[in-house]
Length: 259
Image (cartoon, rainbow, N blue to C red; front, side, top):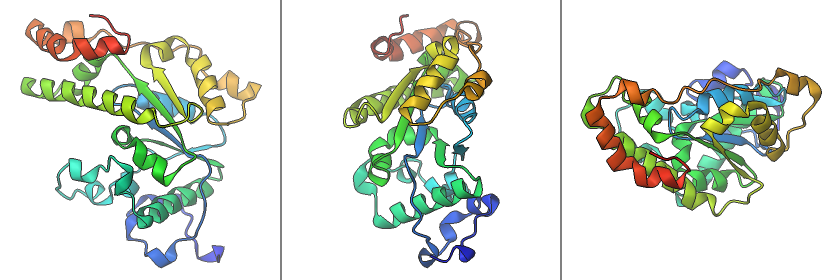
């Protein structure tokens, strides 16, 4: 491998990576990449930002240039067709392309471990595992009433039921596909508990991901975070509360939430 020909500038890696010719692939390998997943507005951003405090981690969020390059360029297409959800969608070309992009990125950042937060990956767990058999997956979930409220603040009311369905489908997808993953490779975090035990949960996450921890890292982690839950009670009309209860109550109780 001629490293002099490898472009390791982080910006060039981010922009239109899919256009790099197959013959330009370097054969670089990626060790135990870390993927943070969860329904949008569930805490994925705050979790990934704090996780990135670890000095060995290089975070590329959300890397649509690699996962869905044509969608990232604004090409109008069906959402479902852009999100592979099963391992049988994986082609050898995908493995080369994605592995190479992320490998180049961690080298450009002078780090040793790659981390990516992308809510769309919540519905393609087996796809991730097919490409990266040794990857670590962290799933964060939150009270769906606050998730739906946060997502639909600037949406028409008729969208609420659809967002409820997306939360249910995503949670069930994770439940089904995480069963096939070793417990040492899958870690689930409840947003409300993360706010209360931030440092403890981040420490547990680092250990699960085989990241070394020292006093300097621990000192940089906050002990607690502000929990922004409960806004759905005052920001949504009572008639919308009825819709939330009808759509979500049964499934949310499975995750430990009570109406």
